[in-house]
Image (tube, rainbow, N blue to C red):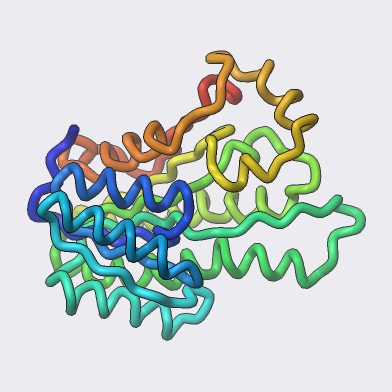
Length: 248
């Protein structure tokens, strides 16, 4: 595993089935970790406790990242409680399914606000700290659906496509400050979102996966840890696919 000793990370959506695994993986690699959550305090607290049991420092912080002042507060609290901020993992997000021609306007706005607008706010606040450090890792969770499309997920796909465009622009703008910005795009991973899919939909997708199986949160987390490390210092503005060959 890559060594993140001396680094401080903030993982948004740490109470989710993927976020908690990413947070723990960063802790296992030596980082101190701030575990952000919106509603599920219990899971975020458990994740933070598990990281402290590894000998790392960890806190859990609540915040509604769709509000600029809340996103800034989450970053401020991370720096105040852990001493700095070097790594941001933008994992928080939602998925709402609706056929395109019947999709209500409020659903579109909700998805874009939670998956894209909030990412702008928290990344901007984190980048200010990283710019002073002249070192930083911005890692954003994307999705394979941006490349392949997916029935009833046009708003979700659009939000993730926006995140990828944002990431490339950040990479170009902040590279001189030794800040990298990359996207990890998972495919069919065994998480809460995947479990909510119908069996018919899973049966359609599984035969398309070259490895013939769904991925695990650990496999996504390993990619995040790599991008957070010194070894990935010359990788920026790119998308790393973790999809088992569902998309090539």
